[in-house]
Length: 176
Picture 1 (cartoon, helix red, strand yellow):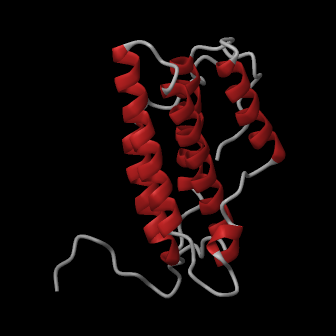
Picture 2 (cartoon, rainbow, N blue to C red):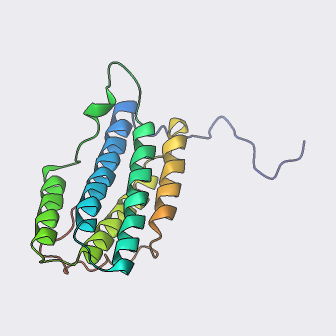
Picture 3 (spheres, rainbow, N blue to C red):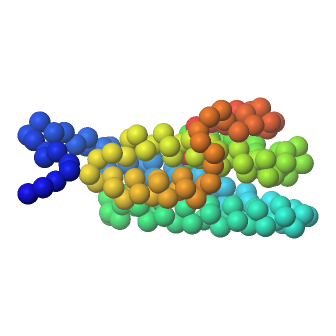
């Protein structure tokens, strides 16, 4: 039998990944962040005058809802763990930051396209960081979803945060 991969021995360890509930909590946070982004983009589209900006925001909005749907599908379907209980912000800081971003955009203190780019950058960073955690055998669906989500965000390689001080809402908390 010819194989290019070395055989797995008794000492080969596959990391276990997170427990089911902890993994589902993270997926629920990702779903919430994408839904919140979708909500903001929907509001912003109602007030955006430029055709080019409208097309970009529509595209971003479609991506956010697609990613949210994928995250929602990855939540467990157990009576003991209802899906709705997982779809929530990761911290009060994240929820407050999104609220402040919404207010700033409504008041005209922040460019909506710039705000969207900052959120996308923060999601990209959070998804990249979670790739290091979603490593267990049961994590394969989430790991695939992470790869797809990162690709759909169409971001440059991780470097400095995009426009870290460009928003009056303060620094972006870790997302999701």
